[in-house]
Amino acid sequence: MRFNPASLKSSASSSRWLARQSRDPFVRQRQAQSQSQQSASNSSEGGASYRARSSFKLLSLAKKHPIILSPNRTKTVVDLGAAPGGWSQVASNLLKSNKARIWALDILSMEKIPNVDVIRGDFLSEEVRDELRERMAEVGVERRGVDTVLSDMMAPMTGNRTRDVGLSLELCAAATVFARDVLRVGSKDDEEITVKGRKVFPGGNLVIKYFAHPDMDEFRKLELEPWFGKVTVEKPKESRSESSEAYWVCLGFKGDPANR
Ligand SMILES: C[S@@+](CC[C@H](N)C(=O)[O-])C[C@H]1O[C@@H](n2cnc3c(N)ncnc32)[C@H](O)[C@@H]1O
Picture 1 (cartoon, rainbow, N blue to C red):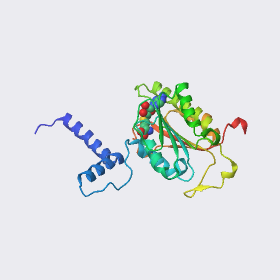
Picture 2 (picture 1 turned 60 degrees about the vertical axis):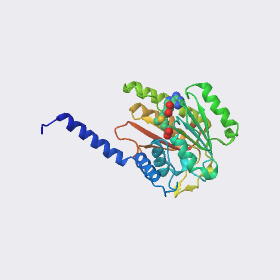
Picture 3 (picture 1 turned 30 degrees about the vertical axis):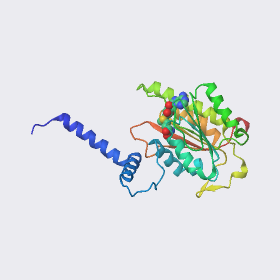
């Protein structure tokens, strides 16, 4: 048999692909669903099913930081960059028991999810942000403030790192300014509360996806850390190691440092 370098290359990359697929929780869930559909005697029992693999990243973040989607405490959630709806599904499922209100916004359309109010538009447009605020005001959210803002927004990658980081920074900045305006400010009365054995930082919470870069570290130090009780950098295991994406989990909104 003749040696063919091309076939070796393709088989090495396909075994890497297969190994990655076998570890991917989204793929495992799809396989389990298709096996249960093939079995006529199987009922629809089992865990929730998700429409995007990104759901598992949020589940992982929420497992580590339960306060971001706490069935006892989270009553309102804004999900930015929500399509196709994986994160909104996680929020809707985890917060089902307390009938939380969820607003999901994306440029793209998405199918309905229980308890989720979908707004379609570009978050960088002031008109779209105003529409989101109006929908939130309809149920009086501004009086109490929002419990959790999530942003998984990501612009299509151009391959030009400077440009991609710039786009990510623009989306992070827009989500941060919005969150600082709508999040519930912590009160000292909350300080002794714990959720799943962890001390809860009083105030609302913010989760933002960003692209790792030194400019982003500076953004975190200047624009997030002074406003929150704690800001952690997270790279959930479900996020591919070759991707430069990561998340800031910002806990316990304290309000404007200039007013403290
Ligand atoms: C990684 S996907 C989000 C996946 C989503 N969290 C899920 O679990 O299904 C990133 C999303 O950000 C959206 N996006 C990017 N820029 C946006 C903008 N300026 N306004 C609103 N959505 C935006 C994209 O349309 C895309 O759907």
